[in-house]
Image (cartoon, rainbow, N blue to C red; front, side, top):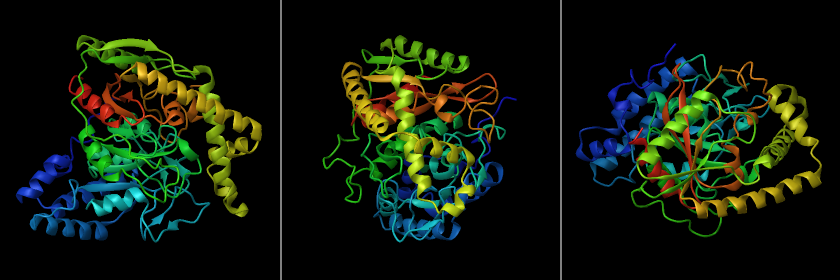
Length: 464
């Protein structure tokens, strides 16, 4: 069955982006309250159809919308996103809200403070609609969990939306909010963006502060998901900056998010087309090839490449990821371990068996890879690749049924290497397979060059 765009039946108020909404707020032709009501209703529909939310917070959202309305009426909005409907992944602290992490083995956390990114969104006047679904502790690249069950794809409810920020992707694709906060430790923003036909960016590591730190360490990033690069850029601009609670942030300012329009003519683009593990689905490869041909026609210089240390990347990443999973599960009460997602339990068990010297060696190999990636992105303006080697598959499954694969890492080889090396990377929609499944194209830029990635994504979207 060929799927239709999930925005097709969304009310007009739920289709508008940041610029149109805030222009209408400034002109007095729209109110943040009426927009919030429309998006809350749409969130209820997305929840009923796809199980995208763990909390839809009508009372708090409408109170925030009324405050935004008053600021716009007084001519003193808090920011460029004041009054814009926003969601938060249910793995990020939100003041006085029970954050469940997709787990029944751990007690929900009711924090007395927002995570830094949420605090910045709140101070900017974002209207927080609620919390979106995640697999347990964000451990895998699809979205189902013991706490909230299975989340399904907005294009086809038989399929997964990807993960781990799957609920956020569904909310974005269906119009249940404009801005969506996700996390990405191995592709968890980019993968659901690809599977669900939206835009998402994993920023340069450290651009957006994170607290508390992820058990998966410095592969984990916080970033925006939206329906356009412009909306994601507006959200990223609000969330970015130094926060003393995040020790892993560099104590220096990263390059500005403002940048010139991206010129494809003469741009040197490395076409990364071979995944470190497994193979690429033919229709996915064909869609990315078609985009590469379009970019050549616009004057870009496209050169096929492999990533440095290609053959080691799967082992380097899984060592980091499995050890992180082991640490997270070890913190749970022993009498609750039988409630943990069986897949996470298996990964954590494998992580406990990693010898300390092997972990240290993996960190050293990661440093060598990151250094080589910095050098590669001195040579190329950008890298281009599929976001994922496969398009969306059956909901509730970790790997495509019948594929012979064992874990999500075996089909996510275009995303996790960039968590190891910490460059900015985005996924933008670039068409669909013959049966209607969205395909995502990934762009990777040098560390700090988030503005270049966003500008290039905007330019490329106008061509495809």
